[in-house]
Image 1 (tube, helix red, strand yellow):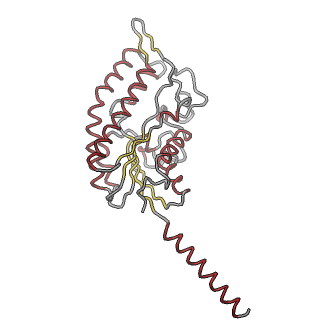
Image 2 (spheres, rainbow, N blue to C red):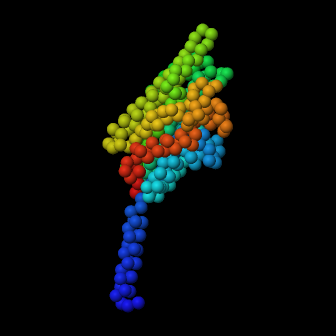
Image 3 (spheres, rainbow, N blue to C red):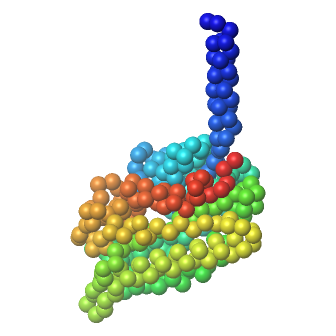
Amino acid sequence: MNRSFRALAALAVCAGSLAVGATAAQAKTLDIVIAGDSYSSGVGGGGGYTGGACTRSPNTWGQVYGQLARNKGLTVNVNNVACGGGVVTDLDKQMLAVTPETDLVLVTIGGNDVGFANIVIQCFTPGISDPARCQSAIATGKRKVPGVQTAALKRLQALKARMRPGGKVVVMSYPYLANPSNYILRGLFNSFNAGKGARELGDLGDQTVINAGNLANAEAGYDFVTFVPVKDRFIGHEPNQDPFKTNSAGWIHEFNNLYGATDIYHPKPAGYRAMGEATMAKAGSGGDFGVSQ
């Protein structure tokens, strides 16, 4: 090998080393905490649950989003502390996992506060659903909404105090519990449009967390909270609210599911996938909501 060739080879190796070093220097890390209720822990997602009764799935939407962020070249760390059955006040304990190194908190919350399980029982469960009890359950849920907004804002403020400066919270909406077709429960002397009532409560719930997020953002002075709408992605994939029928294209477990009773009216892996993709769609060009470091 002559001197000129050796010099060129050395320059090539050096250039390659510099390129690798530059790539490594540019790699960013995204530290994520998943919090909230069963729609964040991943009930219905399967894949091998952890967390005991909290039922945490590797297929939940926060994990899906984390993998999509990795696909963009980010180093992503995910800590799922969400728990099936969680209510807003449970965030007080869950947020202990949030530290000054946390970049992003992903959360669904509020469904259990307004009576999610009771609404499913009274409105959609075969052999149990009843028009009067369904109407009462939904009316009760609507009355509780203002309290949920107040409680949620308090926890958003607490999360901001625990996170690193510039960190953000992503609040995921719930899919509808019923498709757009009217589903009328009929009794001997009364009837109630259970499908319409459930969808109205779902819309009201979305507006509640949007309101809480807007108030938190005004206090923070930046877009601290991002709301991710997902109902549009579930069009055609909602459960068939008639418990004796099914939606073959559904992304939510119905009463004929082959998993378990706790999975009923929770997303299937395809549903969680859609929720994770909706999150990435809101995450900006870098896929990180602008918070990775």
